[in-house]
Image (spheres, helix red, strand yellow):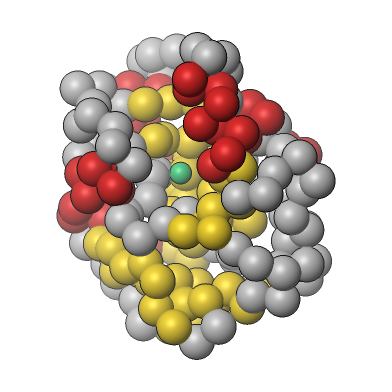
Length: 204
Ligand code: MG
């Protein structure tokens, strides 16, 4: 199983980090060891003093495919979740400055928190109109809707499948809206999908 992540897929988030609006999807990977185990807290890693939360809609691939055309992409998923793409922002800034890959900033153990999955039928929602938000310690810090994506889920699947064969169980983190910021020890993160809290955990 692999975790494919999209960066800068919401214009306001690209702007808040002083990044350009991308002309094509920004893609990076996390290994399966990045998954935060269910009912475990997120431990801030020793190698960072500035770990940021990024709430994202996560799409689960349900069949094998490569070179998928956008108009067929909807056949390759039917479940979504919410996740946090934890990012060691200080390490990432160093990597960017030095032209180095991002894995130490993005792909460390526990850096991919993922809720349970929900079918689009059960949500009665179109993938391009999903509301979500993140509360930290009871205060809303990020909110978004998938209609604000620069590249839609179907466009992302088409794009990434040119480079990577998609397999059943692969996950795609589809990018974060504006409002990212640091987590502190003892923070409580609560993730809401369509107004319903579906996932929560603590930072240690
Ligand atoms: Mg992200």
